[in-house]
Length: 84
Image (cartoon, rainbow, N blue to C red; front, side, top):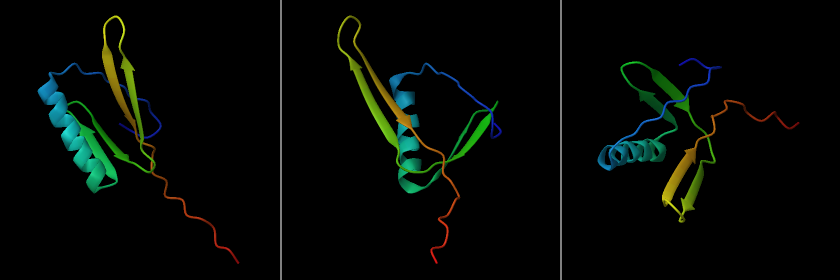
């Protein structure tokens, strides 16, 4: 994927595969500041910044559902100007 484009892909996985993905993602978040998500068809490099937003949404009526969303802001290479 190139900068300046939008991309969205949704996957339906079994819990074990989703858990393995989330563990690997969590380790990358903990240990670095860059991610590279890829399949045989596409690759998405992303340098992330702070703060990471975590949202937990629980719907307990009707058909119960739990949604956990992580939003990573892009990292900026800007630096503050000099104070003179």
